[in-house]
Length: 103
Image 1 (tube, rainbow, N blue to C red):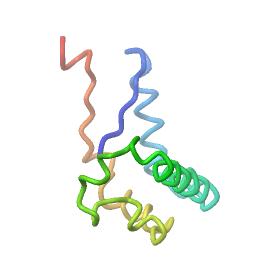
Image 2: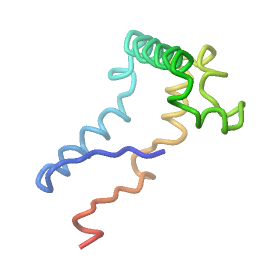
Image 3: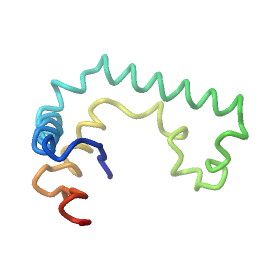
């Protein structure tokens, strides 16, 4: 899982603290209302891809079991919270800062 953002060097701590805050208080930032909006938006994008089927031919190359459209209707807000708890623990996330790593 990648969380990427662009910011100036002086704002790195602020951005990292904001991301940490969201992950640690997911119930505040990912509510049922927001989850439903995001899920509806993704379903709309899937419908668009069906209409313009040439625009996302990569989905035909993926294993059908890996495609979001096969599971999106079964995903719940609790599933997302569980994934955050399992895979996005702040202390386990590697934080890469280009300016200090790639000088």
